[in-house]
Length: 261
Length: 334
Image (cartoon, rainbow over all chains, first blue to last red; front, side):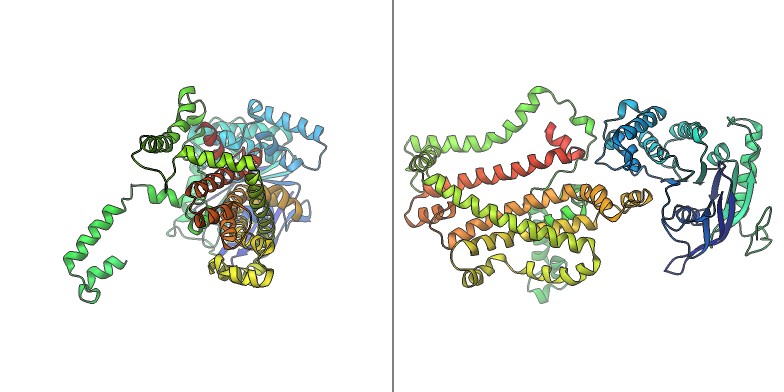
């Protein structure tokens, strides 16, 4: 279980990006974090990844505190961030340097097949399209079989069609080993398609505002009325999180649909 | 800036408004700037720009602006014809001059025709003089280049990697860089004698600065996002250097080596002009003192060939490591 306990982050310039954010995320759960810009979504994700340290509060994975990048936690960024000097295959195998070459080759080959890029194994990253590059990034993050995979707006730079493809593809890959997914996004559609639970954040300072369980079976039909319903409730919550005129029931804690403090 | 100053206060600058306007117009005509030209300069990576500002004729690697596909399959004709196009002008000039001398329109005493230059080279080669001079010069450049590269790489890496060292070291190095390197010559001769040591030291100084700047700039401009990838895979310090920093720095490093080598060739001439009994620079001086322009031009031609050859060697040696770069795909197609 991934537990966030009152995680706060204040940057050296005095900006409070995150205030007492708490959540408990079950193993294998898919969480989407959504919110207006500057609500600390990325800050939160970087704290979970161990890339930035929280100013206070703790992040624990199976009761182990996370303060630096952890083997069981993988991350996918908004940009693919492939290493331009490595072939596609070597990029995917980047995190497997400790394995013997044969075993690594085998895993990389399987991952390549899984993301449908076998014929691009020896290509350079610059020869890939945006969607292909992001698929390589997903394969690179998944190949070490992390328990938790963090995704920081992973599809926001892609066109609508490619984005849909990759969302379905991600779910497909997720089904293999069922890691916990924590996805930061600003796309309501994406959140409802992917997530078991949507956490809505409120900016200045970033904190949890609301959470919405998406009780829909998979695969989800993007055009079903039920899907629309969930989308609307996420949108409404998002609107309320940004609209100052809506009475804030408790300024410091947000409205507690299911709060832990 | 200056012009606008003149425009604003014609009395102080001592020119009338009309004159200043005319000047302004002229200067615009003299320096036409096609749209996008300034932007393209800005598009160079930081370290390359750093080097470019230092040495205007640096062999800057072209950054490919078009997609790689456009260079993928050039027709056979254009592949061979394009480099030939560049040869057209010098060949025409050379043949033209040859013809002018052959027709007797000029005696070609001060500007010898190509045939006479090549005859001089052939004669120097026959007597064994050429090999002796080339060996002497090459050896000096090689030694100076080696010392300059080692020192530049070490210090550049230290001040690029470690910000405390940069604060300690860099201001001094930058101050030393501001000194025209030839100003060291008298001191080097006093300290190190008139023979080889002072020459090698001068060349090493010339090579040092571009390499130092290139390495430091390259390390400083390594993409933080890619370093972060290394961090998420929990690379240790040495692994981070080997797997992320070195490959990221390599393209800029190769550029700085090539700039350094160019300066090495420049400084070997200076060193050999000052006092040498052998070497290509000596051939230059000897040709001047004995009034043999063909010998001077012969030495210049050999300098050009050697300079291009050694530069090409670096390029070829580095090419296998830089295949991933866009620029090299285009270079192959061009």
